Length: 351
Ligand code: ADP
Ligand code: MG
Image (cartoon, rainbow, N blue to C red; front, top):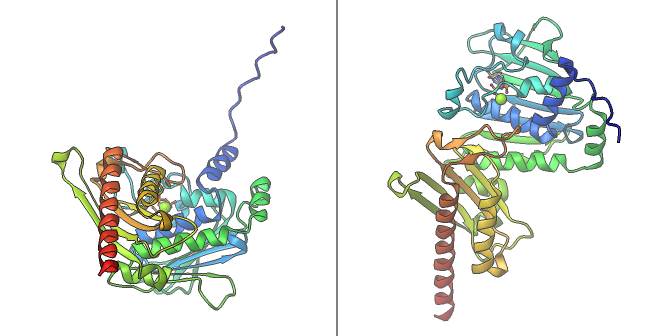
């Protein structure tokens, strides 16, 4: 067979590169919301309010009361790889912020229209400026502003026709956004969150600052969830080969649901871990077959240099040192808790 001529290798145009990269970071409206809310948390906000129109395709607006952005930083705010959080590669392993690569805002400007309004402490007015493809569309305009930053993302994926079409056909992105903010709200219980549809009077997530985690779970997920939860804790020290502590809440045998809810934070970062999820499902199926779809909130803390946060474009997965051991220890703690609760119950029923 005659081989065809090798196709010529060409350098992609920068705008194409940026749009492709942006499509990976911002996979759907909820990914934009997550990045914006994490920026607000990084800015020490105590109140974060989200407004969404058309499942986020028309508008995502996140307003916070954080430290704001300096006027002189606005020209490079939405360029790729501009950040106030990281300087050296090594900083990745000592970082306490959610962000680190200066990709989120830039990505949004490659696939949407972004407008930022911000004011810093001590200023009498704020600034508003719009961005497209990484650059400012105009000089920042002075404007009235209260405190913090408001970011508006409009017409998401206007230049990615296939993405827009698939998303328009699935009506569930608003649900995903509500779910995200509910999860954020119970972990960050010193921050108040709200989320509403554009034009709606009633918020679909509305959390108030609370002193106890259980209170915040109750206010977000409702009494019926909160009343059926038990506290779990586990920890281990360096001598056992791994070093972590975990605390959380797991549902008891009275909690019955169609789907497992695992709200997992690792070093304060909302992540997914399918191995841990499976481990918990197995324990519930074996111990409480009738309540085998639990509600679980878990916060795991590890030394920062035991977690690699840079393995997924949306940061939704992280990789842990000693992951198997940690999961096994958590699994046996959950099992113990469920068995004890079960025994107490049987005992009470016999009385
Ligand atoms: P990263 O969070 O990785 O630094 P982003 O693109 O998300 O990158 O944000 C770029 C920079 O913009 C941040 O480092 C931060 O300094 C600033 N910033 C973004 N959002 C906010 C906000 N809500 N309040 C204050 N500063 C912000
Ligand atoms: Mg960020």
